[in-house]
Image 1 (tube, rainbow, N blue to C red):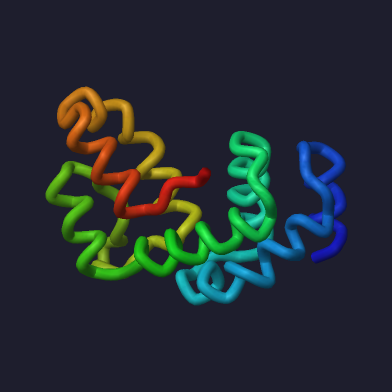
Image 2 (image 1 turned 60 degrees about the vertical axis):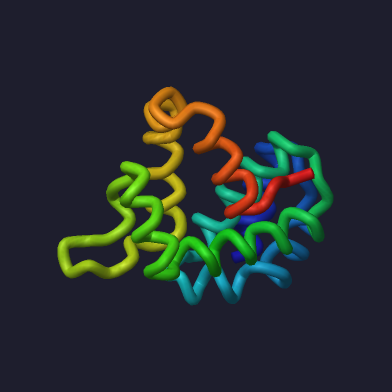
Length: 130
């Protein structure tokens, strides 16, 4: 575990302690959603590198996102907006990393389709990283 954290922090723009703080705040919700440590490190690192927010802020935000993302109500709503790939063939949540990957791959198409409404909804629903 520490080897992954150290390798990632050396490769990207964050400290090992940042990831540890993120895991303390959001790791259990990520694991409960079906994610593993390496996936969490990847998501945390991407958010940290993009936003430069504090580890506390990112951890708290990710906890909210992972908790909401796996709820049936959220998945139903995202599917109504046209986001697919959040459930497997057995109608089970695909996990946080794969879900975020699928959402990310479809955002540009949806942004064009729904314009400002979609962006505002996503911002309010999934938490803005400030």
